[in-house]
Image 1: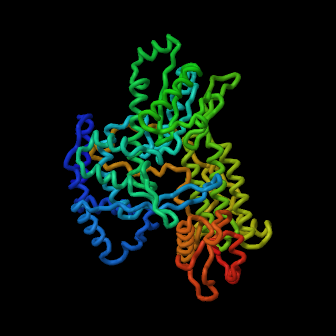
Image 2 (image 1 turned 120 degrees about the vertical axis):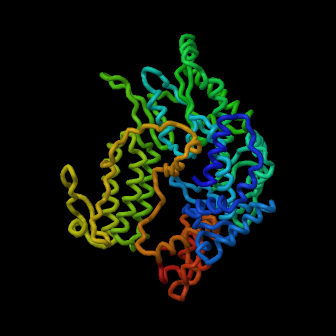
Image 3 (image 1 turned 45 degrees about the horizontal axis):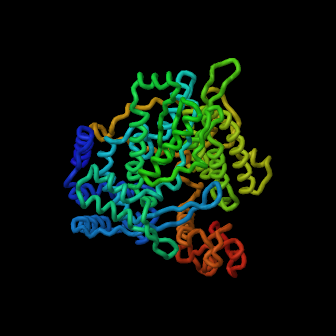
Length: 562
């Protein structure tokens, strides 16, 4: 076990043994070379490091000889001299699957390393403090750990039939800095660490050439932001634990005899639900208690319009799942958990995006592998619930969508596509007709069927602080219905073009540089390819469709990016 791991273990054990202990003399640790190297490796191994912050430095720069060592030594010197100055986060806007856009924060690589250092320092301590009701962005935990509470409690024995669907307005953007720093000081007495966190919080945002102050909220896109948010919302967990969670069996039974309900909390970051087995009047009163606590103690606003009080028989959505209690006429009630309609639509949007006419130059086998990656990841996310009916419908739809793409790709009729790509897939329990083809290695690749995904009963592991043991930390769980997105590009040149295209859109804020419109934006080559233009970022600009078609070079030599 290396020294870093031993240090983290000692923090976790000390925090668990002494809940009131304040840690001192921590700052020198984040200046150590082994800590900085570990933090840098973690940052560069993340796909987000391909995108630069406002300083223009990305993962590609670290391929230059000597750059890595120079970067590490400069950062260590600035940390030792306490002259580190976090830079503003570069904010861009990206399309939402439901329409509209959402902000995306891109810190510099340097600031990401500093945040990773803070995470490495702080997480072992607070993992000893956090309650089991919190599962979001914690090592070794996943969304199903929160959803599983519904399976355990919404049944006729416990009768936790009423649900409060919590919705906090802009939670991460409205975290109060003073309150957050006060909570951090409960555990960390090293002034330099607290000051560094304060600097990161106040670093600001850079958007469209303008600087914006950040008087509240956590850094957008920040590595340490989820941990800071959990520290902040841990106060809500403690409030629930004090008033409702830390009640013994006899006390709960007494409340039931008095016709009073009990409530259970499960939270994944700022998404939470409260399960209650009292009357609706009690549940409405509880919602008001939650609203008052969040506002008075944390300065967060609970949206009463979106914080619904729902009976389990009506069904509710939580973390991409739809949960509903059903009462068959001849059987006991049972809980039905399926993918939410919103998640199904997101999958359709992803596949649609991958099979537009702009992607017809992709190789079919690469496109098939890319589609398989998306739908396999989506099916894997829902492997713990009954989604066979949904999967069958989506399998038919994906098959039709890919079949249509192949027709457009080859510009032939359906019969010819059947001759080219309809194959017999041999399986353990028989065979079936499907779409398939050989890849560049001569191996057959078949269109994945989501209905084939085996259903797996999830058994939550024993919950302990992962930093307490000597075994390696659990690997980060990619707990998202969709894996890292890949469109199915078949050559490196196209990938480079796509990266440049995305960077141009981000740089221009997904707005037309001529009229400012955000409708149907495209990427235009300023100097046409036929005139010697390149795909480099400096030769790209964002235009709306109307401005694009009126540009002189439009259509002279078009490619996927315009």
